[in-house]
Image (cartoon, rainbow, N blue to C red):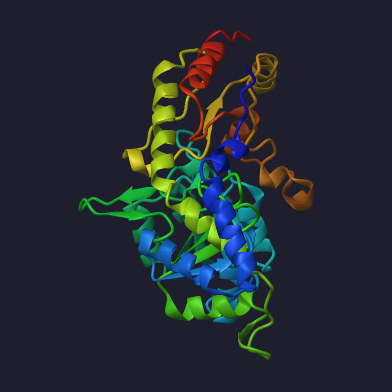
Length: 374
Protein backbone atom coordinates (compact mmCIF):
# COMPACT_ATOMS: atom_id res chain seq x y z
CA UNK A 1 0.00 0.00 0.00
CA UNK A 2 1.50 3.31 -1.12
CA UNK A 3 0.24 6.27 0.87
CA UNK A 4 0.12 9.61 -0.93
CA UNK A 5 1.16 12.75 0.90
CA UNK A 6 -2.06 14.44 -0.22
CA UNK A 7 -4.59 12.66 -2.44
CA UNK A 8 -6.29 15.57 -4.23
CA UNK A 9 -8.19 13.26 -6.55
CA UNK A 10 -9.78 11.51 -3.59
CA UNK A 11 -10.51 14.81 -1.83
CA UNK A 12 -12.29 16.31 -4.84
CA UNK A 13 -14.06 13.06 -5.70
CA UNK A 14 -16.16 13.55 -2.54
CA UNK A 15 -18.02 16.42 -4.18
CA UNK A 16 -17.28 15.77 -7.84
CA UNK A 17 -20.94 15.94 -8.87
CA UNK A 18 -21.35 19.36 -7.27
CA UNK A 19 -18.14 20.63 -8.86
CA UNK A 20 -19.17 19.40 -12.31
CA UNK A 21 -22.60 20.99 -11.99
CA UNK A 22 -20.98 24.25 -10.94
CA UNK A 23 -18.58 24.16 -13.88
CA UNK A 24 -21.45 23.53 -16.30
CA UNK A 25 -23.42 26.44 -14.80
CA UNK A 26 -20.48 28.81 -15.27
CA UNK A 27 -19.94 27.67 -18.85
CA UNK A 28 -23.63 28.06 -19.65
CA UNK A 29 -23.73 31.53 -18.07
CA UNK A 30 -21.20 32.96 -20.52
CA UNK A 31 -19.79 35.14 -17.70
CA UNK A 32 -16.28 34.26 -16.53
CA UNK A 33 -14.76 37.25 -14.68
CA UNK A 34 -15.98 39.83 -12.16
CA UNK A 35 -19.36 38.19 -11.85
CA UNK A 36 -21.89 37.07 -9.29
CA UNK A 37 -20.08 33.88 -8.26
CA UNK A 38 -17.01 35.81 -7.15
CA UNK A 39 -19.22 38.23 -5.22
CA UNK A 40 -21.05 35.30 -3.60
CA UNK A 41 -17.82 33.63 -2.49
CA UNK A 42 -16.44 36.92 -1.16
CA UNK A 43 -19.57 37.39 0.96
CA UNK A 44 -19.51 33.77 2.10
CA UNK A 45 -15.89 34.05 3.23
CA UNK A 46 -16.39 37.44 4.89
CA UNK A 47 -19.36 36.13 6.86
CA UNK A 48 -17.34 33.12 7.97
CA UNK A 49 -14.26 34.87 9.31
CA UNK A 50 -16.12 37.99 10.43
CA UNK A 51 -14.29 40.51 8.24
CA UNK A 52 -16.10 43.35 6.52
CA UNK A 53 -14.40 42.85 3.15
CA UNK A 54 -13.05 39.94 1.13
CA UNK A 55 -11.33 40.99 -2.09
CA UNK A 56 -10.74 37.98 -4.33
CA UNK A 57 -7.58 37.85 -6.42
CA UNK A 58 -5.49 35.48 -8.52
CA UNK A 59 -3.36 33.75 -5.86
CA UNK A 60 -1.92 33.98 -2.37
CA UNK A 61 1.27 35.79 -3.33
CA UNK A 62 -0.74 38.44 -5.17
CA UNK A 63 -2.95 38.85 -2.09
CA UNK A 64 0.07 39.96 -0.05
CA UNK A 65 1.59 41.96 -2.91
CA UNK A 66 -1.69 43.84 -3.30
CA UNK A 67 -1.84 44.74 0.38
CA UNK A 68 1.61 46.33 0.36
CA UNK A 69 0.99 48.08 -2.96
CA UNK A 70 -2.29 49.47 -1.62
CA UNK A 71 -0.65 50.76 1.55
CA UNK A 72 1.96 52.51 -0.60
CA UNK A 73 -0.68 54.02 -2.89
CA UNK A 74 -2.62 55.26 0.14
CA UNK A 75 0.49 56.93 1.56
CA UNK A 76 0.68 54.65 4.59
CA UNK A 77 4.00 53.20 3.42
CA UNK A 78 6.73 54.21 1.03
CA UNK A 79 9.57 52.42 -0.73
CA UNK A 80 12.34 51.51 1.71
CA UNK A 81 10.05 51.09 4.72
CA UNK A 82 10.65 48.03 6.87
CA UNK A 83 8.43 45.02 7.44
CA UNK A 84 9.10 42.64 10.32
CA UNK A 85 8.56 39.11 9.02
CA UNK A 86 9.43 35.60 10.21
CA UNK A 87 12.72 34.21 8.93
CA UNK A 88 11.05 30.79 8.97
CA UNK A 89 8.41 30.99 6.26
CA UNK A 90 7.69 30.12 2.66
CA UNK A 91 9.44 32.56 0.35
CA UNK A 92 6.14 34.10 -0.86
CA UNK A 93 5.90 36.04 2.42
CA UNK A 94 9.24 37.70 1.61
CA UNK A 95 8.64 38.14 -2.12
CA UNK A 96 5.51 40.20 -1.43
CA UNK A 97 7.66 42.65 0.53
CA UNK A 98 10.62 42.94 -1.83
CA UNK A 99 8.33 43.09 -4.90
CA UNK A 100 7.11 46.40 -3.50
CA UNK A 101 10.64 47.66 -2.80
CA UNK A 102 10.14 47.40 0.92
CA UNK A 103 12.74 45.96 3.29
CA UNK A 104 12.12 42.67 5.10
CA UNK A 105 13.48 42.48 8.64
CA UNK A 106 13.81 38.78 9.41
CA UNK A 107 13.01 37.59 12.94
CA UNK A 108 13.65 34.11 14.32
CA UNK A 109 10.80 31.71 15.15
CA UNK A 110 9.87 30.00 18.39
CA UNK A 111 11.32 26.48 18.13
CA UNK A 112 8.22 25.07 19.85
CA UNK A 113 5.68 26.49 17.39
CA UNK A 114 7.84 27.30 14.31
CA UNK A 115 5.95 30.60 14.17
CA UNK A 116 7.35 34.10 14.63
CA UNK A 117 8.71 34.59 18.16
CA UNK A 118 6.60 37.56 19.26
CA UNK A 119 8.89 38.25 22.23
CA UNK A 120 11.68 39.23 19.78
CA UNK A 121 9.71 41.78 17.76
CA UNK A 122 10.32 44.97 19.74
CA UNK A 123 14.11 44.75 19.52
CA UNK A 124 13.83 44.82 15.71
CA UNK A 125 11.59 47.90 15.47
CA UNK A 126 13.21 51.00 13.97
CA UNK A 127 11.90 54.43 12.83
CA UNK A 128 11.40 52.86 9.36
CA UNK A 129 9.27 49.97 10.59
CA UNK A 130 5.70 50.24 9.35
CA UNK A 131 4.35 46.66 9.41
CA UNK A 132 4.57 43.40 11.32
CA UNK A 133 3.69 40.39 9.19
CA UNK A 134 2.76 37.19 11.00
CA UNK A 135 2.51 33.85 9.21
CA UNK A 136 0.14 31.19 10.56
CA UNK A 137 2.60 28.52 9.48
CA UNK A 138 1.44 24.94 8.90
CA UNK A 139 -2.07 26.00 9.99
CA UNK A 140 -1.12 27.11 13.51
CA UNK A 141 -2.37 30.51 14.68
CA UNK A 142 0.41 33.02 15.33
CA UNK A 143 -1.13 35.74 17.49
CA UNK A 144 -1.15 37.19 21.00
CA UNK A 145 -2.56 40.15 22.86
CA UNK A 146 1.06 41.23 23.40
CA UNK A 147 1.40 41.44 19.60
CA UNK A 148 -1.64 43.72 19.43
CA UNK A 149 -0.15 45.93 22.15
CA UNK A 150 3.13 46.23 20.23
CA UNK A 151 1.22 47.22 17.11
CA UNK A 152 -0.65 49.94 18.97
CA UNK A 153 2.42 51.17 20.88
CA UNK A 154 4.41 51.79 17.69
CA UNK A 155 1.45 52.56 15.34
CA UNK A 156 2.26 49.59 13.14
CA UNK A 157 -0.01 47.74 10.76
CA UNK A 158 -0.26 44.00 11.36
CA UNK A 159 -0.69 41.84 8.26
CA UNK A 160 -1.53 38.14 8.44
CA UNK A 161 -0.21 35.64 5.94
CA UNK A 162 -3.15 33.27 6.26
CA UNK A 163 -2.23 31.08 3.28
CA UNK A 164 -2.14 27.91 5.39
CA UNK A 165 -4.70 28.51 8.14
CA UNK A 166 -8.22 28.83 6.69
CA UNK A 167 -10.56 28.05 9.58
CA UNK A 168 -8.12 28.52 12.46
CA UNK A 169 -9.00 30.74 15.43
CA UNK A 170 -7.39 32.77 18.22
CA UNK A 171 -8.91 32.78 21.70
CA UNK A 172 -8.65 35.99 23.71
CA UNK A 173 -8.30 36.31 27.48
CA UNK A 174 -11.91 37.55 27.68
CA UNK A 175 -13.01 34.17 26.20
CA UNK A 176 -13.98 35.59 22.82
CA UNK A 177 -12.42 34.19 19.67
CA UNK A 178 -11.75 35.33 16.13
CA UNK A 179 -10.80 33.55 12.95
CA UNK A 180 -7.39 34.09 11.45
CA UNK A 181 -7.72 36.53 8.60
CA UNK A 182 -9.71 38.85 10.87
CA UNK A 183 -7.12 39.45 13.58
CA UNK A 184 -4.88 42.08 11.98
CA UNK A 185 -5.37 45.12 9.78
CA UNK A 186 -5.43 42.94 6.66
CA UNK A 187 -4.69 39.38 5.63
CA UNK A 188 -3.63 37.46 2.54
CA UNK A 189 -5.21 34.09 1.79
CA UNK A 190 -4.25 31.34 -0.64
CA UNK A 191 -6.68 28.87 -2.19
CA UNK A 192 -3.99 26.85 -3.97
CA UNK A 193 -5.36 23.34 -4.66
CA UNK A 194 -3.39 21.71 -1.83
CA UNK A 195 -4.67 24.06 0.86
CA UNK A 196 -7.39 23.08 3.37
CA UNK A 197 -9.72 25.28 1.34
CA UNK A 198 -8.36 24.69 -2.14
CA UNK A 199 -9.59 25.71 -5.58
CA UNK A 200 -8.99 23.64 -8.72
CA UNK A 201 -6.34 26.12 -9.82
CA UNK A 202 -4.74 29.26 -8.41
CA UNK A 203 -6.85 31.68 -6.37
CA UNK A 204 -6.43 34.02 -3.41
CA UNK A 205 -8.03 36.83 -1.46
CA UNK A 206 -7.40 39.71 0.90
CA UNK A 207 -9.60 40.31 3.94
CA UNK A 208 -9.86 43.54 5.90
CA UNK A 209 -12.23 45.73 7.87
CA UNK A 210 -10.72 48.89 6.32
CA UNK A 211 -13.10 50.41 3.72
CA UNK A 212 -10.44 52.62 2.11
CA UNK A 213 -7.99 49.75 1.83
CA UNK A 214 -10.62 47.43 0.34
CA UNK A 215 -11.55 49.99 -2.32
CA UNK A 216 -7.89 50.48 -3.24
CA UNK A 217 -7.31 46.72 -3.37
CA UNK A 218 -10.23 46.17 -5.75
CA UNK A 219 -9.01 48.85 -8.09
CA UNK A 220 -5.34 47.85 -8.03
CA UNK A 221 -6.21 44.20 -8.71
CA UNK A 222 -8.19 45.33 -11.78
CA UNK A 223 -5.50 47.30 -13.66
CA UNK A 224 -5.81 50.14 -11.12
CA UNK A 225 -9.35 50.82 -12.26
CA UNK A 226 -12.54 51.17 -10.22
CA UNK A 227 -14.35 52.55 -13.27
CA UNK A 228 -13.86 50.95 -16.68
CA UNK A 229 -11.06 52.61 -18.68
CA UNK A 230 -10.39 55.07 -15.86
CA UNK A 231 -7.14 54.12 -14.11
CA UNK A 232 -6.48 55.70 -10.74
CA UNK A 233 -3.47 53.51 -9.93
CA UNK A 234 -0.70 51.78 -11.85
CA UNK A 235 -2.40 48.49 -11.07
CA UNK A 236 -2.09 44.78 -11.66
CA UNK A 237 -4.24 42.14 -13.29
CA UNK A 238 -5.02 39.78 -10.41
CA UNK A 239 -8.55 38.41 -10.40
CA UNK A 240 -10.26 35.24 -9.26
CA UNK A 241 -12.34 33.83 -12.09
CA UNK A 242 -15.96 32.73 -11.85
CA UNK A 243 -15.10 29.04 -12.19
CA UNK A 244 -12.74 29.01 -9.21
CA UNK A 245 -15.20 31.04 -7.13
CA UNK A 246 -17.93 28.51 -7.90
CA UNK A 247 -15.66 25.64 -6.89
CA UNK A 248 -14.59 27.39 -3.68
CA UNK A 249 -18.18 28.08 -2.64
CA UNK A 250 -18.84 24.34 -2.81
CA UNK A 251 -15.65 23.27 -1.05
CA UNK A 252 -16.12 25.93 1.62
CA UNK A 253 -19.17 24.05 2.95
CA UNK A 254 -16.91 21.18 4.01
CA UNK A 255 -14.04 23.22 5.50
CA UNK A 256 -14.86 22.94 9.19
CA UNK A 257 -15.72 19.23 8.98
CA UNK A 258 -12.49 18.48 7.12
CA UNK A 259 -10.42 20.55 9.55
CA UNK A 260 -11.96 18.51 12.36
CA UNK A 261 -10.80 15.29 10.67
CA UNK A 262 -7.31 16.76 10.32
CA UNK A 263 -7.27 17.51 14.05
CA UNK A 264 -8.33 13.96 14.84
CA UNK A 265 -5.52 12.55 12.69
CA UNK A 266 -3.03 14.91 14.30
CA UNK A 267 -4.17 13.87 17.78
CA UNK A 268 -3.75 10.22 16.82
CA UNK A 269 -0.25 10.88 15.45
CA UNK A 270 0.70 12.77 18.63
CA UNK A 271 -0.62 10.03 20.91
CA UNK A 272 0.91 7.09 19.06
CA UNK A 273 4.15 8.11 17.36
CA UNK A 274 6.79 7.11 19.88
CA UNK A 275 10.30 7.31 18.53
CA UNK A 276 13.05 9.11 20.42
CA UNK A 277 14.69 10.05 17.09
CA UNK A 278 11.66 12.11 16.08
CA UNK A 279 10.46 15.42 17.55
CA UNK A 280 6.70 15.85 17.24
CA UNK A 281 4.89 19.19 16.82
CA UNK A 282 3.40 20.70 19.96
CA UNK A 283 -0.31 21.20 20.52
CA UNK A 284 -1.87 24.66 20.34
CA UNK A 285 -3.57 26.17 23.39
CA UNK A 286 -7.01 25.52 21.86
CA UNK A 287 -7.84 22.74 19.42
CA UNK A 288 -9.20 25.14 16.78
CA UNK A 289 -6.05 27.27 16.96
CA UNK A 290 -4.34 24.71 14.72
CA UNK A 291 -6.04 23.31 11.64
CA UNK A 292 -3.08 21.07 10.75
CA UNK A 293 -2.57 22.07 7.15
CA UNK A 294 0.70 20.19 7.63
CA UNK A 295 1.88 17.72 10.26
CA UNK A 296 5.58 18.48 10.56
CA UNK A 297 8.08 16.41 12.54
CA UNK A 298 11.78 17.01 13.05
CA UNK A 299 14.77 14.71 13.14
CA UNK A 300 18.55 15.18 12.94
CA UNK A 301 18.78 12.75 9.98
CA UNK A 302 15.86 14.09 7.95
CA UNK A 303 16.98 12.73 4.57
CA UNK A 304 17.48 9.25 6.04
CA UNK A 305 13.99 9.31 7.54
CA UNK A 306 12.47 10.51 4.27
CA UNK A 307 14.25 7.80 2.26
CA UNK A 308 13.16 5.16 4.78
CA UNK A 309 9.52 6.25 4.55
CA UNK A 310 9.67 6.34 0.74
CA UNK A 311 11.08 2.80 0.67
CA UNK A 312 8.17 1.73 2.88
CA UNK A 313 5.49 3.29 0.68
CA UNK A 314 4.90 6.57 2.54
CA UNK A 315 5.18 9.80 0.55
CA UNK A 316 6.49 12.82 2.48
CA UNK A 317 7.46 16.39 1.62
CA UNK A 318 9.84 18.96 3.10
CA UNK A 319 8.32 22.33 4.06
CA UNK A 320 10.84 23.88 3.40
CA UNK A 321 14.38 22.69 2.56
CA UNK A 322 16.03 26.10 2.05
CA UNK A 323 15.19 29.17 4.18
CA UNK A 324 14.57 32.46 2.34
CA UNK A 325 17.84 34.04 3.48
CA UNK A 326 19.80 31.19 1.89
CA UNK A 327 18.04 31.35 -1.49
CA UNK A 328 19.99 32.44 -4.56
CA UNK A 329 17.48 35.19 -5.33
CA UNK A 330 18.45 36.84 -2.02
CA UNK A 331 22.19 36.23 -2.31
CA UNK A 332 22.91 39.46 -0.43
CA UNK A 333 21.53 37.71 2.69
CA UNK A 334 23.30 34.38 2.19
CA UNK A 335 26.00 35.13 4.77
CA UNK A 336 23.46 36.04 7.46
CA UNK A 337 22.84 33.58 10.26
CA UNK A 338 19.45 32.62 11.71
CA UNK A 339 20.34 29.46 13.65
CA UNK A 340 16.83 28.43 14.74
CA UNK A 341 15.42 28.95 11.25
CA UNK A 342 18.29 27.01 9.72
CA UNK A 343 17.85 24.17 12.22
CA UNK A 344 14.16 23.93 11.36
CA UNK A 345 14.79 23.89 7.61
CA UNK A 346 17.45 21.20 8.03
CA UNK A 347 15.30 18.93 10.20
CA UNK A 348 11.62 19.19 9.21
CA UNK A 349 9.64 16.55 7.37
CA UNK A 350 5.90 16.63 6.66
CA UNK A 351 3.97 13.39 7.12
CA UNK A 352 0.80 12.65 5.13
CA UNK A 353 -2.16 14.71 6.35
CA UNK A 354 -5.54 15.01 4.69
CA UNK A 355 -9.25 14.61 5.49
CA UNK A 356 -9.54 11.51 3.27
CA UNK A 357 -6.87 9.38 4.91
CA UNK A 358 -8.15 5.96 5.95
CA UNK A 359 -7.61 4.83 9.55
CA UNK A 360 -5.48 1.92 8.31
CA UNK A 361 -3.22 4.38 6.45
CA UNK A 362 -2.68 6.46 9.58
CA UNK A 363 -1.92 3.35 11.62
CA UNK A 364 0.49 2.07 8.98
CA UNK A 365 2.39 5.37 8.95
CA UNK A 366 2.67 5.32 12.74
CA UNK A 367 3.88 1.73 12.72
CA UNK A 368 6.54 2.48 10.08
CA UNK A 369 7.69 5.68 11.83
CA UNK A 370 7.97 3.90 15.17
CA UNK A 371 10.25 1.24 13.65
CA UNK A 372 12.64 3.83 12.20
CA UNK A 373 16.25 3.74 13.44
CA UNK A 374 18.91 5.97 11.96
